[in-house]
Length: 449
Image (cartoon, rainbow, N blue to C red; front, side, top):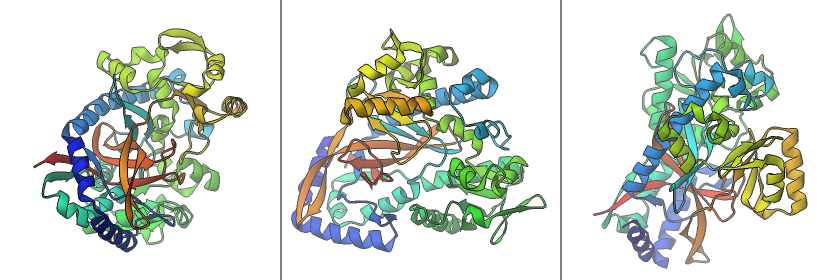
């Protein structure tokens, strides 16, 4: 049925309707500030369609995997030997056990995944447990696509349900504040990040949404903040709740571990979402902790099954023996000999930085990548087949359909349930808008009328 929907959408997209749709899309992108830096956020004329069954499967499988992540996080806090597997920096060790004032280490987060054919049906390749971006863009793109000329035709035949994300960010912020303060009021929210980041346009979308919900909100940079007399201060006065979009390692690099924000957090003077404890699961080594045979005792039978089906084989790059597909291996020679089936990823980077795709580099480049991976924390991960779908765009006044790889990135609320979904498209194997290799399109659940 979903294939029928995509085919019908494409059949309705004549050159005339596509041209009208493209003009309106361009106007709306500019009007609503839907740009990542100076690049338009969306360059295709079709949203991502999921069937109800696909979305329910994503939610159910994701919930079990999230249970396993939570158990790994609890084990790390209780046992230094487990914590060491995540390869935290020294300054992170000093912060991850500081009380946050609320239950979840990552009240807002996002999984990165791919639907795959065959056993398992889904592969989760990363867990963005620190600063999951894109939810504001997704929600406003959804509004834009509902109003496009092509959707006027398509909605006569198909029901489409949006998958928004901003509401859960707001709920998670208020829930964390209530736990932290013991109060049930409407605190002012500070969105904190550097003034020059390309996601400033998304901060404005969140600010607009929060204010329309009756919650005061200010966007501010870390250098505008001070800590005086037990109070964290911003340009407009005291800050009690931080929606932290600044990356913690960048905050430490620029401001040190005694930055006012971090001093206020240590003293329990500010409610920070997400807090430093999120760094444990944000490390890409968290997928190695899940899939490593030495940690199997941490999980229940249903979690072990979900890990086996949906977490690609992942290990921290180091000299050791381990298993691969139930076979004992010497890890470093295995990595050297299986370049075309493996990918190297830095333990804590974003935007595709430092990633080495073994099937796209030479033997010499792979050796250099492995050498780097032994000098700083890296993981090695099994290559997975990336799903493709045809998406339309306008080229010289004509509709052109091109296969694009499709990333499925569901949003997570309170650390345990999936609600909302980001979809990224790319013609290159590195699907990342930040890296300049992808585009975003809104996600809808579609059913035939």
